[in-house]
Length: 217
Image (cartoon, rainbow, N blue to C red; front, top):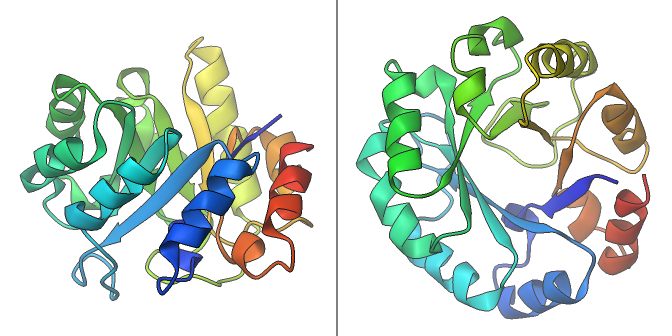
């Protein structure tokens, strides 16, 4: 049964309270929070202040995906905004000193994740895979919601699953982008543990039922 992490980026920002309550009442496991800086990706989303409001609105895990440059400058701020049950994922493409970034996140008492873009080979994680808790595999190009799933991602999931299993590690594979009810099962079959779903959940006539369907996979 996969972990389902609806992305609040697709929520109704004029009524976030209602959407948070919906997620709390649903079978969703995590709140997925996309942080964009307008530099690493074209869009700007929100920062630590809004994360702190999400944190107060739920007891569920807050899964932060930092699509930002120089994430080391902001890791402590996000720790303070998100308390102690925070997954913090930084992009390998934005971290020339990735091992140092991972150690910083761990030292702050958070779970460490590494996100990789569609063009980044899974093999680039070989030297850090034993140090992290999660890989956030982008199945669309980061920065925009509503994109179509890149089919090549399935091959990358299988490669990563083999790498993790061969080393006997407990690292979660998270799929972020273009996840639908039609392709979610294929992702799980390939080895995915966590499904990030934005438009699929929030454009549904019955978001709770859609989340329940994703959980059944």
